[in-house]
Image 1 (tube, helix red, strand yellow):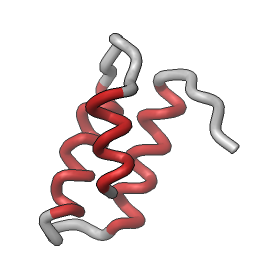
Image 2: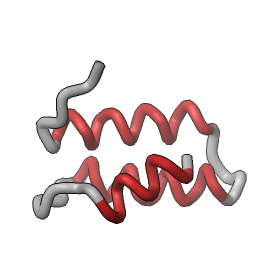
Image 3: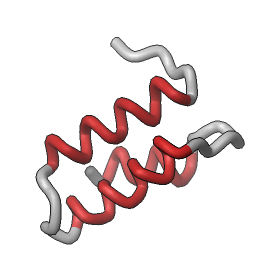
Length: 56
């Protein structure tokens, strides 16, 4: 989750859509132990799709 949080904070495009904001919130929750890591992973993937990142 730390890598995802770093990616969201440092390397994300200027456009921050609703999925980006959700991913930030869910990743923070996962880092604090308040959320399942898989849920945070799915939120990050949704944000990446919204930002038109190529995922492999």
